[in-house]
Image (cartoon, rainbow, N blue to C red; front, side):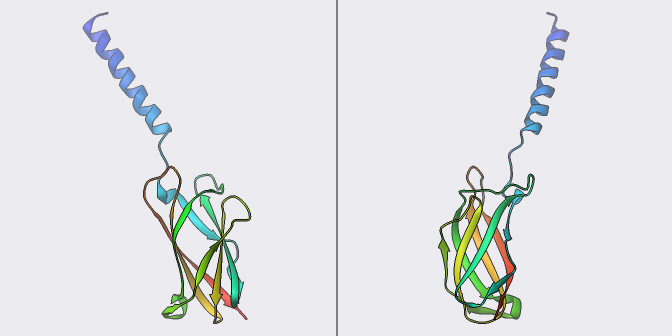
Length: 134
């Protein structure tokens, strides 16, 4: 094989590898989001809030994320310092994450979550707004 043919072959191989790399690009943590399953929740000591973790590229649910930060407060009603206890509950189905909160007042509440997604680098942070109804 001549030098020019070797160079052409090497160039073609490099282009093929680049194209292959683009087609198998890894997901980013920004490709995921938490979504409330219901925006209205019954006010009370044992209010249940369900959220689904979704891969925005496919619309499919994502199971086995590690939720390491939770907070619920009344920021939507201008009372960010008004917080409530919240605990993680066992999931009822893959990709659905459940929480029990003590929503002592009716009104707007903000659920803040921090999560690690298996196989992805970075942290998914989400702020979801729901309404506690009497």
